[in-house]
Length: 123
Ligand SMILES: [Zn+2]
Image (cartoon, rainbow, N blue to C red; front, side, top):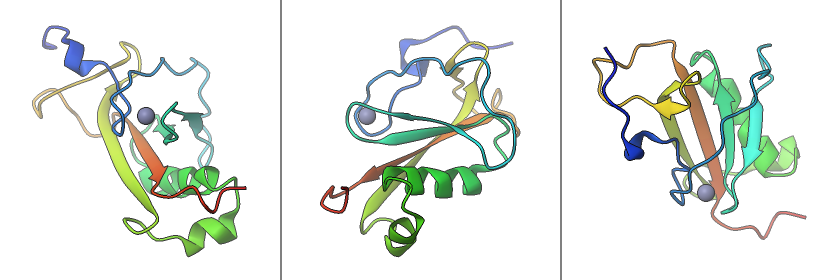
Protein backbone atom coordinates (compact mmCIF):
# COMPACT_ATOMS: atom_id res chain seq x y z
CA UNK A 1 0.00 0.00 0.00
CA UNK A 2 1.28 3.43 -0.91
CA UNK A 3 1.70 6.07 1.78
CA UNK A 4 -0.71 8.96 1.73
CA UNK A 5 0.08 11.86 -0.54
CA UNK A 6 2.39 14.45 0.92
CA UNK A 7 3.27 17.81 -0.53
CA UNK A 8 6.94 16.90 -0.18
CA UNK A 9 6.39 14.07 -2.64
CA UNK A 10 5.56 16.44 -5.43
CA UNK A 11 8.35 16.15 -7.98
CA UNK A 12 10.50 19.23 -7.63
CA UNK A 13 13.60 20.52 -9.31
CA UNK A 14 16.39 19.39 -6.96
CA UNK A 15 18.27 22.64 -7.55
CA UNK A 16 15.64 25.27 -6.87
CA UNK A 17 12.74 23.32 -5.35
CA UNK A 18 10.25 24.39 -8.00
CA UNK A 19 7.59 21.75 -8.68
CA UNK A 20 7.58 20.71 -12.31
CA UNK A 21 4.78 19.57 -14.52
CA UNK A 22 3.90 16.02 -15.37
CA UNK A 23 5.75 14.90 -18.48
CA UNK A 24 3.57 14.15 -21.50
CA UNK A 25 2.10 10.68 -21.65
CA UNK A 26 3.92 9.85 -24.84
CA UNK A 27 7.40 10.03 -23.48
CA UNK A 28 10.00 8.54 -25.80
CA UNK A 29 10.65 4.94 -24.94
CA UNK A 30 13.42 4.18 -27.33
CA UNK A 31 16.82 3.84 -25.82
CA UNK A 32 18.85 7.01 -25.97
CA UNK A 33 15.79 9.17 -26.42
CA UNK A 34 14.67 10.87 -23.25
CA UNK A 35 12.05 13.43 -22.41
CA UNK A 36 13.91 16.57 -21.42
CA UNK A 37 12.82 19.89 -20.07
CA UNK A 38 14.33 23.10 -18.82
CA UNK A 39 13.61 24.45 -15.36
CA UNK A 40 13.28 28.18 -14.87
CA UNK A 41 16.44 28.08 -12.75
CA UNK A 42 18.44 26.82 -15.74
CA UNK A 43 18.67 23.19 -14.72
CA UNK A 44 17.94 20.57 -17.36
CA UNK A 45 15.92 17.56 -16.33
CA UNK A 46 15.54 14.27 -18.17
CA UNK A 47 13.14 11.44 -17.49
CA UNK A 48 14.23 7.85 -17.75
CA UNK A 49 11.00 5.89 -17.70
CA UNK A 50 12.78 2.60 -17.12
CA UNK A 51 15.19 3.73 -14.43
CA UNK A 52 17.82 1.60 -16.13
CA UNK A 53 19.28 4.07 -18.60
CA UNK A 54 20.25 6.83 -16.24
CA UNK A 55 23.84 6.80 -17.48
CA UNK A 56 22.65 7.48 -21.00
CA UNK A 57 20.09 9.98 -19.79
CA UNK A 58 22.84 11.77 -17.90
CA UNK A 59 25.05 12.11 -20.98
CA UNK A 60 22.13 13.33 -23.08
CA UNK A 61 21.23 15.83 -20.42
CA UNK A 62 24.76 17.18 -20.12
CA UNK A 63 24.93 17.59 -23.90
CA UNK A 64 21.53 19.29 -23.88
CA UNK A 65 22.70 21.65 -21.13
CA UNK A 66 25.55 22.67 -23.43
CA UNK A 67 23.40 23.29 -26.47
CA UNK A 68 23.85 19.76 -27.85
CA UNK A 69 27.52 20.48 -28.27
CA UNK A 70 28.88 17.05 -27.34
CA UNK A 71 32.49 18.08 -27.73
CA UNK A 72 32.00 20.91 -25.29
CA UNK A 73 29.88 18.77 -22.99
CA UNK A 74 32.50 16.02 -22.86
CA UNK A 75 35.17 18.56 -22.05
CA UNK A 76 33.24 19.67 -18.99
CA UNK A 77 33.72 18.01 -15.64
CA UNK A 78 31.13 17.02 -13.10
CA UNK A 79 31.31 19.03 -9.86
CA UNK A 80 33.73 21.38 -11.60
CA UNK A 81 31.58 22.78 -14.39
CA UNK A 82 28.18 21.37 -13.59
CA UNK A 83 26.27 19.61 -10.84
CA UNK A 84 24.24 16.43 -11.16
CA UNK A 85 21.23 15.54 -9.06
CA UNK A 86 18.83 12.62 -9.26
CA UNK A 87 15.24 12.03 -8.36
CA UNK A 88 14.47 8.35 -8.26
CA UNK A 89 11.39 6.37 -7.34
CA UNK A 90 9.22 8.49 -9.58
CA UNK A 91 5.72 7.22 -10.20
CA UNK A 92 4.65 8.58 -13.62
CA UNK A 93 1.01 7.59 -13.22
CA UNK A 94 0.60 9.58 -10.02
CA UNK A 95 3.25 12.17 -10.91
CA UNK A 96 4.84 11.94 -7.53
CA UNK A 97 7.98 10.71 -5.87
CA UNK A 98 7.64 7.75 -3.58
CA UNK A 99 9.46 8.11 -0.31
CA UNK A 100 10.96 5.22 1.57
CA UNK A 101 12.65 2.06 0.41
CA UNK A 102 9.69 -0.15 1.19
CA UNK A 103 7.69 1.34 -1.67
CA UNK A 104 10.57 2.21 -3.95
CA UNK A 105 11.22 -0.66 -6.31
CA UNK A 106 14.01 -0.95 -8.80
CA UNK A 107 12.92 -0.32 -12.32
CA UNK A 108 10.87 2.71 -11.41
CA UNK A 109 11.20 5.86 -13.44
CA UNK A 110 13.83 8.38 -12.43
CA UNK A 111 14.95 11.88 -13.29
CA UNK A 112 18.43 13.19 -13.73
CA UNK A 113 19.09 16.93 -13.47
CA UNK A 114 22.13 18.81 -14.67
CA UNK A 115 22.86 22.43 -13.93
CA UNK A 116 25.83 24.40 -15.09
CA UNK A 117 27.80 26.15 -12.41
CA UNK A 118 28.73 28.83 -14.89
CA UNK A 119 26.90 29.76 -18.03
CA UNK A 120 29.89 31.43 -19.62
CA UNK A 121 30.29 28.65 -22.20
CA UNK A 122 26.72 28.76 -23.39
CA UNK A 123 26.25 30.61 -26.68
ZN1 LIG B 1 15.11 24.50 -10.97
